[in-house]
Image (cartoon, rainbow, N blue to C red; front, side, top):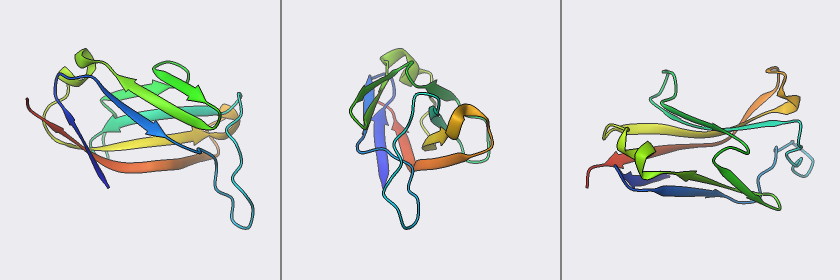
Length: 109
């Protein structure tokens, strides 16, 4: 699924019922000591935008909402990007799971 945003306009993304999928079990909920990260970048390159929960996020139950300001999107060239939501279990850098991996297209006004 490809998301689209307009360069120079505020945008937001909603991620509902976020959890770590474990085969044969129900999803594990994100805990306070886990690091939830939202990134936008070109494939195989350093992200051009990174937000770590709670900065730039809001949370309701097990759903997360990420907000991009008009100033943030204005700095993004009109290209196709990879948008990811990842969780680093216990914030130790050893168990990192990609929860969302989508294409994001930035278009001109």
